[in-house]
Length: 320
Length: 299
Image (tube, rainbow over all chains, first blue to last red; front, side, top):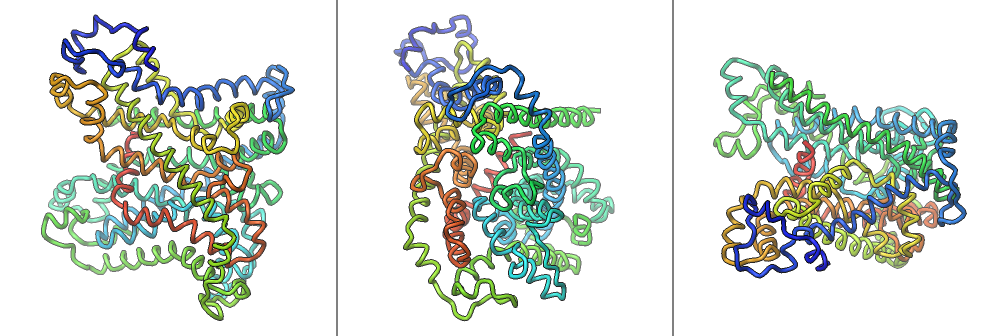
């Protein structure tokens, strides 16, 4: 690590204008005086476990490799061509997008609703935080096994029993019926993760200056008007952020489906990440799995790039 | 739902802090009481699954699937807990999870803080290029790298090792970004005084910058700890030996060996879920602030 100090000369030209405060003259230069030393540990790990896999994965997607890294030969874009024609890629991509659509709306709306409730009530905040946020802290394995074994089984599961307690006898196959499996997974995810959005909204609400409301009140604005004309517009930036974070999180769904339905019934809930896992880790076609990963990556990248665009447009609107 | 919050007629929404500062508590108007009832109902709904898990874990095995809804079995028993404890696996996974999460958190905080300091306060050739690379990495979800990352682990011989689980979770570009934003706001004058006194960068970093950044470092640490503790996909892929599994992976893995012993499954879930809830009870404020930091930094 110290060798870097020797090779890179100090940027003399910059020294005069360097506001960062180079050490005073006369101080012996030590190895820690070179900035790269601070960045090096992070960058070493970063290069090895993010940058390199990103590059090598792209290379692998052009080969017919199996999981152990042997037997691969260059086959160009064949994997991509196959993926585009593979109905399982399309159906699992669709399941991923469908889950994202179904989950994002309630996760954002309920998160906002809970935050408004907690903020408005301004009492026993710890209770709201504990009950609505605490599930987010549970490992996916705990949440999914709980819903799989105790809440959702038909007949003796809590969901069915509550329904029969109010006179309904649904006997719904929450996870085994194609019509309900995805919805059950969405409901589980809502219970599990809405607390994160709740906290983001709560933080944003608490940052709104009180005098805005007091001024509006003097002008005779009712509670509804204040919500509509002060609270919600001021939450717009947070909403963009929450929606984008939520979409990105939902697109990466794997745990809930893998644990609760294994992708079933009849592969109706299998998301793209599970298909990558099946191809690469149980089907040993890691080259093909990489190609499918990159198609998925393209989808995620598109969504990530939408946020700055949205924020910029908002900023421009505000500037007008 | 958000519509229902407008029913209230109280003067102005304010956080507890403001209410205290103003010296007046909002009155309990009918609208506010309705809101309170709604909130309590939702709280009950959210706590119900957890309560059901605890209730089931305290039932004798034969009563767990009995159908008329009943919260207490024929008797209250800790049988399930002692059986789970005796099997021993759970404790091994707890220790694995604890070790992996603590190591990952330590390494993440130290490497990311150093990198952020390097990017904000030092100058070296290629600094902008490297920082650009880090920023670009924010958009790479680790989940899309599972195939190449796993092959790399095979080649490095890190499958079924702690390091195989830890290392890919350490270099989180978003954390560097959060810390860079924070360090940019730390006044340089504080450091300059130390430089004049002859302190080196390393000293300044550890004795001035790090202590000043305690809140944001705590946020980063807690957030890293939670996500590492709960991570499923990567540990699931890289561990095959039950002795090296983390808690979430181990639980899912043996779900089949428990068969239909629901009380035991629920007992292990209660044991597995409790540590982070205890952490939450102690660090509520920091966790809330951490989420706010992490989220708001994205703006």
